[in-house]
Length: 424
Image 1 (cartoon, rainbow, N blue to C red):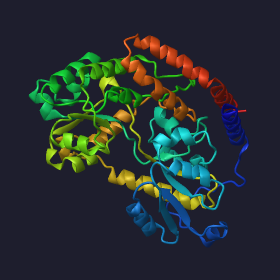
Image 2 (cartoon, rainbow, N blue to C red):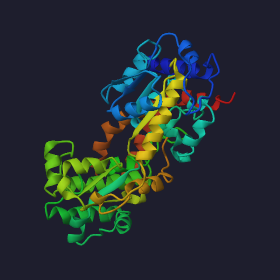
Image 3 (cartoon, helix red, strand yellow):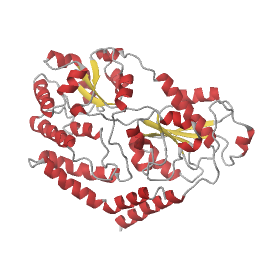
Image 4 (cartoon, one colour):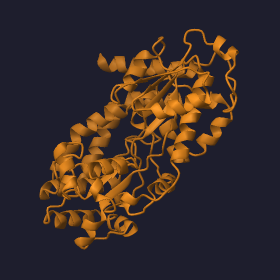
């Protein structure tokens, strides 16, 4: 019964998406064009722009009000873990926001629902922002059919390997970013390094699943053909490393988000992390006295990846789309202005922002879908058993692929049919 209900809802969502259209044609608004009294008169229910966010946007709002003092803005801050579900629940009610800040990890949950506005409806100006997004990353900010741009990134949060260059060099391992990336392209090298460093009380992994999380940064769980993608050689290599971590006790068994893990990092017991450019600020807070000791490099296995980052959208039922677009433009332009390239002393003079922009063009395999959460739950229930097993990794992933595709066969068929009919 539950499965029938889920299929019915998914079918309804795509039928609604296919049949929906705007009742009125939106008028492109220039960034430097002020709102008129007519704009206020045509929006009946609300007299202010309602913005939902999961982080502090005080400075953004202050700058926006300087540019557009005639536009009233009310900003509501929700919890990170609640904002996507709250948006879905509020859609179509008077509580629905006009603008919403989301995390790209929420894309799969939302891109199958027809609740976010197609930003391209705002006119040609959208193109200059869209051109800044690498083509292979567009699915992250599009609906599942790839015919609507439903969000703009606040930043392209390219994933890096963060590492203590001093600790690696002291123990005979490459400290140069390029040489380290080449060394870690081989799974066995990563294991050998971890074994040797453990002898000195230094860890490269927080948990034995870390290599698999790194692999997942480079690929969505389904590919563009809606086929299971996590059975590739990359994931086989990652599971091999995870097995070796478990067998040899190479994991710290504590996270940097826990007090014990944070203390281990400060004590020089944790020498490697993987995350987006925001990790730099986190390290500054966790270990300010380690300035100049950390560096960034590419991900292991010659991977390019993406770590979740903020994005901004306009809701489809917003009554203030022109004002909302002004807000979105201001946010993105302010971010670009403050995101100018520059050397980072904490990272020994490296320029991670320029590196992130350079690496972003190589990010592939990103295609979030409404089935991601269900499939990730199945993955999590099975992956520990695969790591703990001595059976063939390729064989077990093949069986898991078959199971996951079978479980979601009907849902994937509905999505495929919706995608194929988008041009009809």
